[in-house]
Image: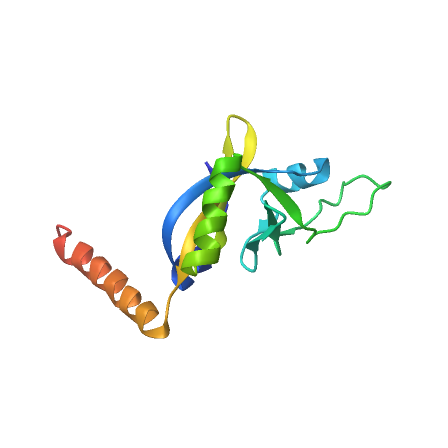
Length: 147
């Protein structure tokens, strides 16, 4: 079940592969994400020292959050994947001109997971073409619908 989706990623990029990653979160972040107070619109994934990090993901703290900590809504969060997956992603990102974008946050067996996509940027004419394709699919469904 998806909690938060990054619809802008599908508009701006061609998604070639999808990978599921765990995230290192603090307690208040888990509570806020479960309440749906996360945003992936401006987020991206970077590689530092052979590890993946999520940057720019905004998690708004709940009002009932603990008073003895200072929540940082846009802190850098480490992503957890198997070492061979990380190596393969690093190779593709460095060699082939791909980038890593977060696609959605969801539950899996009670844990919060992040789906990241290996993506290639779209040009403006590609965006227009995919918009026309979506519009045609909608029109086709409308025409096929019984009256």
